[in-house]
Image (tube, rainbow, N blue to C red; front, side):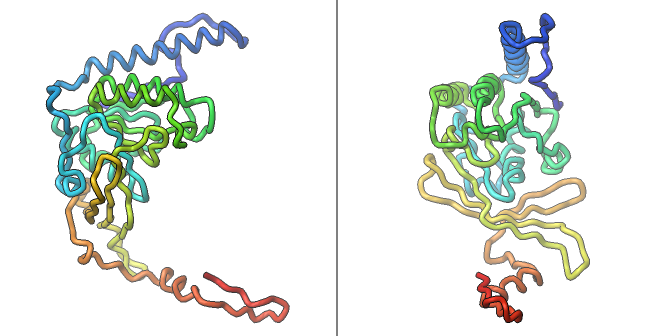
Length: 293
């Protein structure tokens, strides 16, 4: 079940008004209250039934090397690098298959087909579109925090992108309250990209990604190997592993592999660029030698 909630469309009848001023602010308040009501109702429907002592969500086997205790409720996990979405889908899959629910807040580029290929049960995903431009640098942070506060009340997992206004290290009071609410409710927040002011507890970063299947002008992509490193303030030291993503029909299967077994395929363009790291002499007498490095 995928439900799109559009923050821009009033969900309750509001008096029409065409001019800015008190009426405009009243409409905005009605709209925000309506969105909170919808999220509260959804939260009641999918409220986790786990006991308070069950403080973790399970993860698939390859990710168990990075997170042996699973996803700890109340924490913020950031997925960064070229394979951020693949990691997010892989982290969420097992928890959702075993009965959890996930809210996806303001991730317009989320591919539902890709999520389904990773084994994510879409009937347990609720997609929320607040209409906020995540790349707008100012004036949107508090609205996003209100929506996220409502989402963490009723869902096991919340997947989101942190707005630009909150991507710095400054922690306003509203963000601290959201962090406290996350811990109290026991949800897990997964961010695509830097957690910003939220302060990520665990960071999963793609260090290298290798595609397999293409030859010299022939073939098709059928495997991907990613090297992932886990670190963060809630993790002693660093952990790393290599995970193989194998395409099998309409599904993607995860498998642990050894980094030493991963061979980088022949890449002629990369070899040419490597050869150009020295000095290139320009033949035009009017131009000085050009150093390429």
